[in-house]
Image 1 (spheres, rainbow, N blue to C red):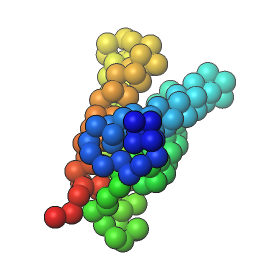
Image 2 (cartoon, helix red, strand yellow; image 1 turned 120 degrees about the vertical axis):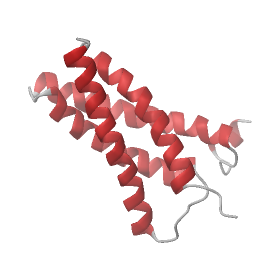
Image 3 (cartoon, rainbow, N blue to C red; image 1 turned 45 degrees about the vertical axis):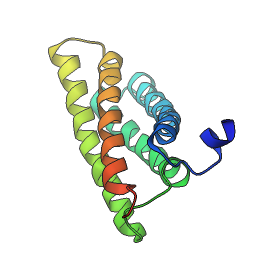
Length: 139
C-alpha cells in the first residue's frame, strides 16, 4: 500500500488526490511562509505578498505534479504543457486575490483567515482543471 501511494505510477484518482494533497501541502507551506515573511517582516502589502507567494507555490506545484502526481499528460509539447499549467495558475491567482481581498476588506477577517478560505477554493479548482485539461488520460 505504501509503495502504491508514494512510488508506483499514480494510476487512479484516489492516489492522485492523495499525492496532489501532499504536493499541495508542500506548495502551500512555501506559499504561507513567503506570504507571512513578506507581509510581517518585509512589510509589503498583503495582496502583493500574496501574489509573490502564490507564484512560488505554483512553481512547486508544477514540479511535483509533472514528476509525481499525474502519470499522463494531454500534451507532448512541453511548452504547451507549461503554458496551460500556468494559465490555470493565473486563473487561480485571480481567485486567490479576490478571495483574500473580499474576506479581508469586506468580511473583516484577518488576512491569513482569508488566505485559508482562498486556499481551499483554489485547490479544488486547480485539481479539477489540471486533472481534466492537462493530465487527462488519452483515449
